[in-house]
Length: 270
Image (cartoon, rainbow, N blue to C red; front, side, top):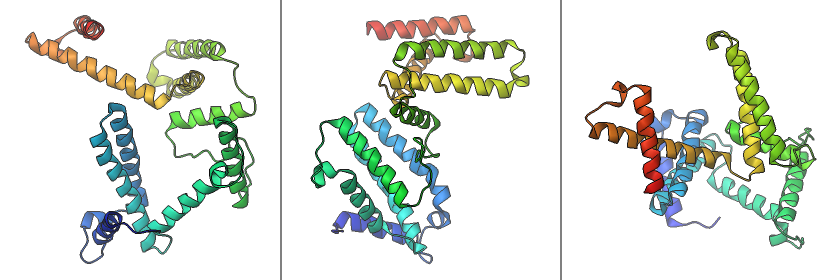
């Protein structure tokens, strides 16, 4: 692959950090498993910068994510498995192979055709590697965040017709699952019914993910929005309490709820 000064510099920095004699003790202690959580965290930091529309921060976070790729490639190279150039070559080959309408003579008519071809090519790739799983659900990673895996499972099933025809029956199912959760809470102390509550809450969350899919809403983006909203309003509550010379922890729930409503009203009129 063509070399670039900045990429060569980054690869050199990582090689130096992993040098057995002159490297960084912390970096030398790491392996694939210990670095994996950082890789996931950096991907979410990229998503957060995008959500905030902060391009300067996005540049910084993309660099952090690239470092994770370089780190994994360096460790693999030390084992004689592959290097960064192999990673780049593999993804380049894959992108050309999966876009025959761009790099070959295949004709498509819109994004739906592109998606269909993409999945067909992926199935052929799995078969060529000797993967015997021919299920419509084959190839969905077990390492995905569970909300994302839920949506992928549902979308794959929908491709072979196993899907609700629209959002209305999904909302009915949400109500049904919510009633089942309520029934489990009514059985008695939650400490004595953890297994059933976990199962029923899982069913409820799974159907909620399906509802988001029918709405063409990204579950992760929706949750991030809800988290940001909660954090913004809660911080506003704390500021209101502090301005009145009060502590949030010293207020009862009724007083806290009044602050919450005031924070919501301020957003609507702001």
